[in-house]
Length: 133
Image (cartoon, rainbow, N blue to C red; front, side):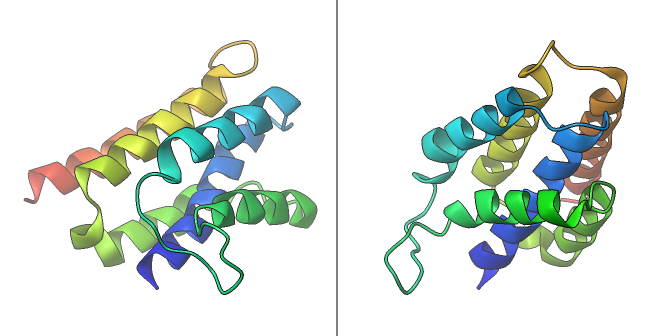
């Protein structure tokens, strides 16, 4: 259940990253798909009832946010989820989150100011986690 919720929250977070400048580009979507395939699929082996790797939920959640035009709530929602489940976040998960967020930010004309703000919020969230260990 943790991974299903995590992946849904990550879709929201990554959509907020991509939409932070007011638009989501094809390059940002491709960066997300590439990191899901390269980083998230190998992380753990859960599947849904149809045999689809659960990490696909990241992309589904991202796409849903796009249709719902919900571009601001992702970082707040993820932060709450992280605070509630911080003991379940391994270094590999945190590394994948940072890697994916940076890939999205750099996908189209490099990182802009709004994307940098989201990256800084993530860094602060994870630094607080490290300090509390």
